[in-house]
Amino acid sequence: MELKLFGKYAYDGVTVKDRSMQRYLSLKPVVLPHTFARHANQPFAKAQVNIVERLANKLMRGGTGEKISGKIIRTHGKLQGKKTKVIKAIETAFDAIAKKTGKNPIQVLVDALENVAPREDITRVRFGGVAYQVAVDISAQRRLDLALHNLAIAAVLASFDKKDTLSDALTNEIILASQNNPDSYSVKRKNEIERMARSAR
Image (cartoon, rainbow, N blue to C red; front, top):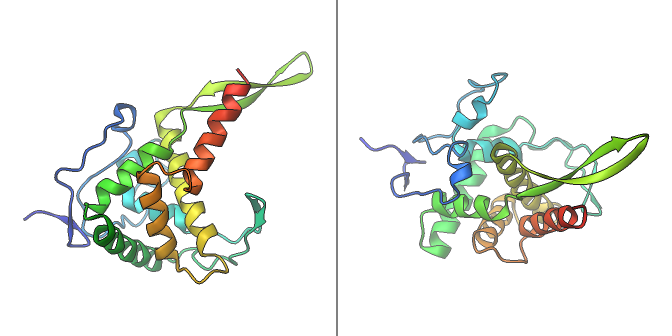
């Protein structure tokens, strides 16, 4: 019996074009993306966690009140620990993606992650008491982490104090990112990170 995500979406035919990310982007067939922290506190074990579950984990943000893109987001931890609620929002978003695009939403998510994963970043290096910003290449695992983080942040920003629900915001962000649309928040973040790295070369 073939396992399908939420009993609807097949993993067969989903391809990862970015060869550097193939090792870390897990498409292990599961019906419900919830491993109950089976891989927690194990080095590099998150590479074995289904990519949809990793997105759910990123969406379970605490309300830290930190400034993000010039805005202070105080969610008061409304999604913190509410994994079932987040998974339901992702399922609703995937249904909308399938309806709008006519494509497998797992493939649309993979395309979006490939498009928004930055290849360069900057780090601070100290020489003789003076700090410099230096451009560095990003490992494939960190590229995927940043891509998931930016997609989750974009969905939270777009649904915070707005009429759009989290699932609506997630739907729009994933579709825009999969098309590499410059209106996508995560695409903007990727371009900004790479622009800063180019200027620091």
